[in-house]
Length: 100
Image (cartoon, rainbow, N blue to C red; front, side):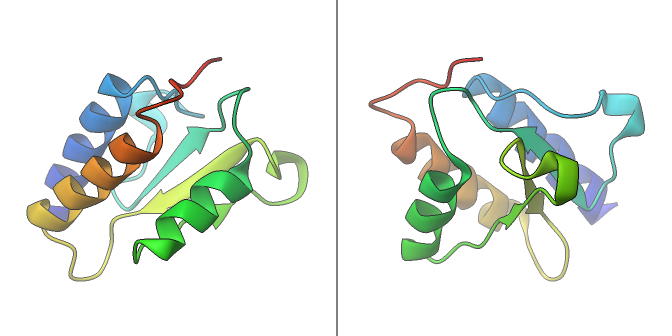
C-alpha cells in the first residue's frame, strides 16, 4: 500500500514538472518509475545534481542508456521522502523547464 501511494505521489509530482514516462500507468511498477530524459538535459545532470543533494537515481541500460532514468521508491521511503525528492528535482529544473 505504501509503495503504491509513494509511486502515485511521485508520478503526479513528476508529471506536474513536465516529465514524461517510459510506460503508461497500467504497466508501471509500484517500486520503480522510468522517466524519459528530456531532450534539453543529460542523465548525468540529474544524477550528479541529485547525488550532491543526497539522492541516487539509476541510468537506463543497454538500448535505454541515455534515454531514461530509473527512480526507485522502495525500502523505508515515506511520503515525506518522496515529497522532498520531488521538491529537490523541482529546484533542479526551476531555471530550465523540461522539453520533449
